[in-house]
Length: 250
Image: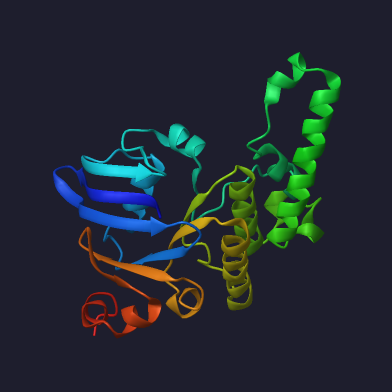
């Protein structure tokens, strides 16, 4: 069953087509990757799916519901979360505090109006979940570290953890291993793979480091000039003549 269906989506900037009739279907619990030369529309497509930008045509269906016209916050509440190439944690908070603040169960001021026993139970549940997520992304030893003191790769793991804490079922990631050393880059994708399998979360990732990502993703969309020119498994993609000509430039 498809968790996300994109049908004939267009997006223009200043009259120039950036997305030119995109059709995609994502299955639940799988890892997808978008590749293509700079300026082909990958990040724009992520922004449109997440509600950061509105498409100029076409439709986006998520879990059977039309989210085409929803904004960023409304889309986030449906369970679609976008992470950024440059992580954006709360820099003065610890790793653990960042996860607590990202919880979809964090009811904020409503605790004031709830019986003490109720919000104590809520707090205990959120703290337990944050501890579990911290272990999932490999940051347990950095629990009390202020997030701005984490390495770049660790901050990206924290971004992943915050997305999971939000209750996301579809996570859109923009270059999660850009600027990360190969060892930690592999660890990040290993975590993504494990989380996808154990938590039944779908990932759609923009990433240029194919030597690492292609070991973990299951399906690839190759883009050029705002269109998907071919899709398939990583093995099929690296052998495709269109991809070799367009993306690899040979």
